[in-house]
Length: 485
Image (cartoon, rainbow, N blue to C red):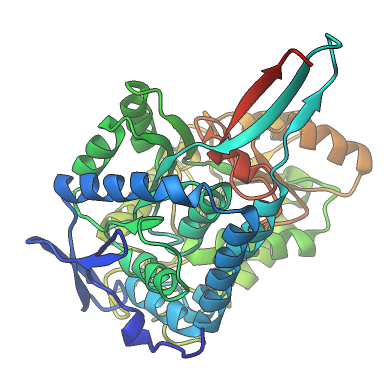
């Protein structure tokens, strides 16, 4: 882009359908969780809006799929460049609506943009096959084609990256999209649409529909036979409901759902490294990530040393308004999140857990600020062991031997991410194969990357995002059998 847009110019408040910015007769407020102030009043999509977006995406699909891979790649690359040119402004918008520290938000912008850059290249690498002959007069070929119109429903905790991680591979494959961003954080998605429009991504290829009526959006989207794919990131309960809606028209689904990630510290671990990596996993976005370490399982012989060092590191964290770059943690997203954290900690304490670090709600900073908490003596019967916390609460549980540690880690219906720290090669090999999760961090707390396939097992979802596998989620495999040769 030749001319940069200001932060205010990137804040859009209307629906983006078929290359047009459209208002509706209903609006909802987007508030700053740090202070409760209204950031913007945004148009809310209704069933008519959803149908219009599907119409636009269906029309645009006919021409977008005919673009060469080079043409689609070029547009995605231009979108990537525009995103990175506006990194700081996009980060500030994210902090205003979501609360995370602005430097962390800037990191998310770069992370989100990395998927656009990656899939700009993957657009040129979708390959078919020529199969071995079974008849000398016949040839068997396999080609990949874009699946069609894609519905995307994204969460509030990563309001930029969860958009790009879905939209970029869809566009690279030749699909068009209808996106519902979360009602808490629609401005980041709309800002991406502003930049997509500026770089000339054709009308109807990307459609962004903010709404505070998720039920109407989902039901309308999934009832339309022209929608051939749904990609959703959010809770398992909502994902199960969407899967049922998609079953009527056999819509292909990708679901990235809830987690209950264990973080195991074995007796042969480098304790300093384990503390460092747990901090990286646990406190990103104030603990509000689907792959955040939820259950910290520590072997008996290193438990006390680990807890002591971890407590020291947690105490150094600064909590406050995300627009102040000195702060490490911003507010939680809403009062329900604060209440949930308080309830989980209270239940654990009532059942015998010990408070090592008393934090909790900080009314001086504001009702949604929650200082880090660490409890020990956690057991499997406590709600905090069975529930995705989504807050800066560290729950530590002891275990005896390796088998018990792995058994505790797998004792959950979820399987998105798991982490462990160890140094013995044979143990690393055994445990990495035994843990039931889609992503395993071995002496590493930051494991999400555009090159890595991201997704879970069990109740944590279906499908993979990112990596060279990600584009296949948006393509159909077609077999061509040609005779008479």
